[in-house]
Length: 461
Image 1 (cartoon, rainbow, N blue to C red):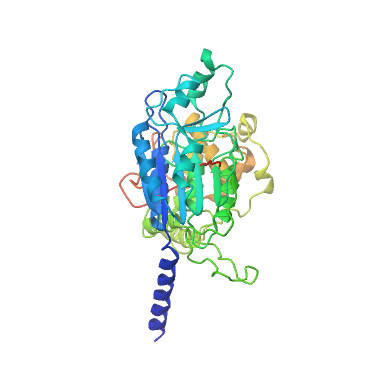
Image 2: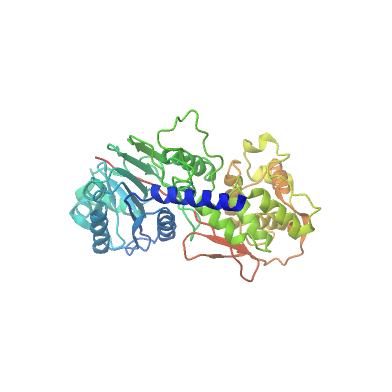
């Protein structure tokens, strides 16, 4: 009888969730990276695929494209504009190069060849203001995300042109104001440049968007607060997303778990620790794995995830049996670890020999940070150390000090992960899912596991 009641309750919940997603939702999602006239960008296509998948999972009709020329991009925009007529929610996401000229923002197709202001204004670039006004003005709710704040090589070309030397060409994108019912989100502040992230994965901004904007029961403005915090932490406070909003109501991309309409917000408990679609997919892909590296990759990407305790327990069982207790990531960490900078001098004071450096590299690999185990702290290893520091909110310098080294030792869930006798040339390989941005770590062979992961935005009326 209890099973029947539970089944009926579940069925009712699914019906209500379907009804909530029955409004008209459309999205434009494009990532341009394969530029023909400047160096290509490695991540925008991956970013677009990740975002498109997340939006489709919550009921959006997605107009998607990657590496589009001017003509192809125009075709996609026309298609999106038609579908957005009368939409309840319209989303505009773009990853790739953008440029600001005299305070106006432009998006760049992959065949753009900008040598002067005239090239920009006569159609080689996409005017953001006009595009959004033409395609989204009829939608009730407009959400605009542009990961187009990267350092742009076209800017220098335009500044050097004789006919346009007096023209203001900004780094990053110019500030924009949102109209009624609109939210604008940039990867970083106006006039600043954002980080691309590791090649072949998501940028920090897109990774944060994918992890938060479609979380069950999380209102979009709350989600963007989480996005800013995640990017700020991941980049070691070197990048802070910026936005402007004129939304006039609550907006849920995934209303499951949201408070019922008309409920008293003060008396309605907020959802506790909602699991995003991306995190849930990640966990499903590795929950039955026998590879410790894949479970550690989950803990790295979701240090406070819903399945943290299960992952830790399974790691302990796989490595040393159920009697081996796994350490909490923050247990025994000196608070000064989060504020004390590290540099070459502080690292020299630790006096790490080659074996100890290999041990550091093994431990980083075991936590999901792939690096070559050779006992040398070369540029690649420095980059990995910096990513580990940023993920832990330590000062991200790429060098270690005594406190950080101690903290790293405390993170290891089993001594076996860091004491195996490996060759100097050991490398941890990773593979990516076709869904975009995801990766799972393994030492040879194959196995499940995926991770999606940042973005930016702009809009003005």
